[in-house]
Image (tube, rainbow, N blue to C red):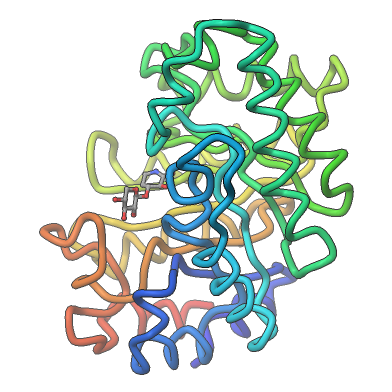
Length: 299
Ligand code: XIL
């Protein structure tokens, strides 16, 4: 089947996958993407360490390659990610001056987001992983130096740089409705949207198969989608990749009206950041697993 076509038949925008130059250069992997996915997310090439390792010097070859693949094959792109504590160069994380950090963050967002304005970028993960497990703000240079206001500044800068893109806040472990972090995400986004912060969507990374029963996932997703215009599953992978679990996760998006899409975090297990858990839809040799086949029939 084409997963993307089957999913779109439910009124959704895309099923996508993480990719980058390395995996795209594998012809088998690239063909699976062409046939099955309608959207790509750069797995690493748009992160700060890859795009601005030295202040003011932007290296966008990897990001350009991903966007070109998407354009050549009429796929959407989810830009990932502008403001994140991880894969962040030390020249940024060591800034202590408020004005300096604001300037640096604004310049980074303007350049990165602005470069791809007018291209097929559907959405941007503007801020990533800003909450701790207890629902408080994560200690990062952005929060520690700028306070909570870094969120509003990041989103308004991204909006100005690409008014057409949907702007997302993205995080992991939002997989149970009663969990502190899930509730904090919903409550804070509600507050920020009411205050005029241009947040369009919540992304639930959905690295599943860990701490919570998969049965909790649909209600968790709904609780996030309820507070914002749209939502998406942005980095799906599931320990063991049981077909039933994949169906539960993907159907959770189908069943929530404003859930626009699902992105799986890689094609084949050999390329997965969780490769020891075999979490993807294709095995280490790019053979479709039961999870893939059963999704095709379920959709
Ligand atoms: C991961 C990539 O898959 C790895 O290749 C990289 O070494 C580390 O980052 N949350 C995110 C993603 O938002 O960007 C991360 O991707 C996985 C967790």
